Length: 396
Ligand SMILES: [Zn+2]
Image (tube, rainbow, N blue to C red):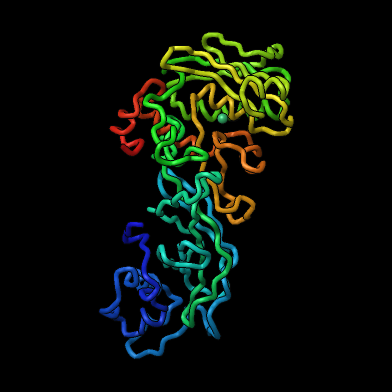
């Protein structure tokens, strides 16, 4: 994390208590650093602080008599995580008798090895320049090593014990773009490393040419819940395409039961589990095209044999057919852990143990940020990877 005056991570030894700062001399101690000067101004400028009086006055507590350090903060919450901006909002409930809080960021629960931010008079803070969480187990589903956020309550007497920690992931947008548009890199589910296809990926982005009006035609056999999810996911794409492409969702009159290609359309149909296995070589479904290299501007999705309450498969296949998107994934160390309630699993990820992907059938905010970044840069289907590199959208 880089440091700024308003949002800096300091070492624990730099955190001063109210008494240390005010000292009732009216003079900030020369050994104090910038963050503590700011702290002193806040505290000493308050009418609640006794340090603003004449020299030699006995210091008083900011909050009346204090008999001990505050209790632990037990409500830390992570929200509004942006991989694009590398930020996250941290909020917590006020702790009785606390005058300030220390926000710890570490690589394990309660740790502070990635830094500490001290705040006064607030119960919310936006962390910035958050380090990326490396993917430590791509084969097992792109598991990331998490960061952990802990909030300590503090007053003039002391600092609270650790409360529970909240989990935080920080994905690399360049890696996410590479996976979605070029099937490349460690954000591809099951990335197999040097020598694999994912290590090289595709040289050119696939998809529909800019300006195309794409018709997504959905077979009547999908459940209303699945159709709603499909429409929501396509609304998300329309927004992320930034006007470069338009997709409309139409109810299709009947099941086709076969692959069908028609210019300008993506068909989303259901077939039997035996058929889907025969056609796709897998149990869930597949999609053919769009293939910009051969200018085949149509696609077909086969999906069959899954529960009508599973919203993931049809929306996922529509993401392939309409967006030309590849697979992408990053996930918490343990997806059954409730420490990551803010996290959205990728729609373009693969389903692991039934978690995450199937719940909503819509794109994660971080997938949409990646798609929007590409289209708003004027790129898309047919753009060579070198143009993505030139615009800083992927690493060389
Ligand atoms: Zn897929």
